Image (cartoon, rainbow, N blue to C red; front, top):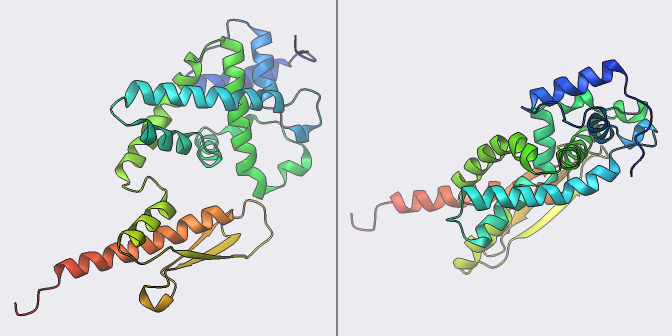
Length: 258
């Protein structure tokens, strides 16, 4: 059995219960031991305590994928397995978890060490880790996926609706490659440079994309991101907008002799 450590202070108990209530969850039936798991999930390693989020983050990773699979299977059975896999990748990603943590105000209940608390650039990573650990704690405490679904389903439904409304499902690199290959233009080529050293800086990397057989090989799009992959995705998105606008203009142009 995992050691629970010292008894939680009344103040911390009230804080955790209020946070669970804000997520639409009730007090664990297991009482203080259940709250201890929640506290463990919301204690970052930087706090220097023996009980921290790492164990439950590992569990939460598996629980998250299973719960997301159930959500998609139950609410979107008409989609192909491939389409559901693409959607699941989006709604279990670190980016999605970081955004979830921001929306749910998880910063207010995560215990951090002084150095991590002052590192604004690492905040998104910490939010994502805390959300994943909390998912693990909910499963461990309740012994079922029900509280995970209760918390995440509204957020998943909103995100999935936005993804389904996007013809490229936010995978702009793949969409750009398919667009250029279908027209015999070859593969897009990306260049990327690191513009800052700040971890988590949304403009840390800058990427540009070109297609050698199109527009004299000039950049079709530029993008910025916290990682090379994110910057390349944003560059591909910008390029697609350019190409689709040009295609639309071409379709509206009158034929010769009209």
